[in-house]
Length: 128
Ligand SMILES: Cc1cc2nc3c(=O)[nH]c(=O)nc-3n(C[C@H](O)[C@H](O)[C@H](O)COP(=O)(O)O)c2cc1C
Image (cartoon, rainbow, N blue to C red; front, side, top):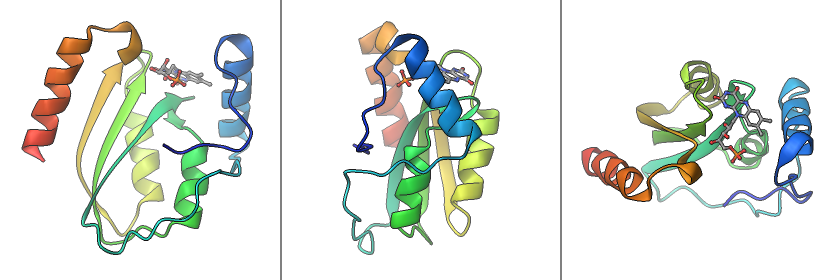
């Protein structure tokens, strides 16, 4: 779990305000996470909510403190129905020098049927 030091507001206007502003200003919120030694990993699964058609800014910080190159990348996203076209493109730009193998997205998974989501995730993992 990627965790900003300053907690993101959990809901409502402040969450949209904080999140939207941090995308627009391309912020790099400081993280509680320490750098990870990724050298022994070939595949990396990484996910984010879609915020303003982009990824959540803590990922910018994550990829600044963790140099990710020559990996097979699997992207997963959740969103409110706007899709992931721009999200995937922006995240791919952040992950140049890697191979994006597969992407998957979920519309507001916490409000959806958990069994259906579990099947979708299992299928995706099985294909990887
Ligand atoms: C700041 C902010 C911006 C968002 N922008 C989009 C968007 O551009 N497109 C979209 O489909 N959903 C958008 N959403 C909805 C979330 O992607 C969606 O609710 C997601 O499933 C859960 O995100 P969360 O973990 O931030 O609550 C946005 C949500 C927030 C908080």
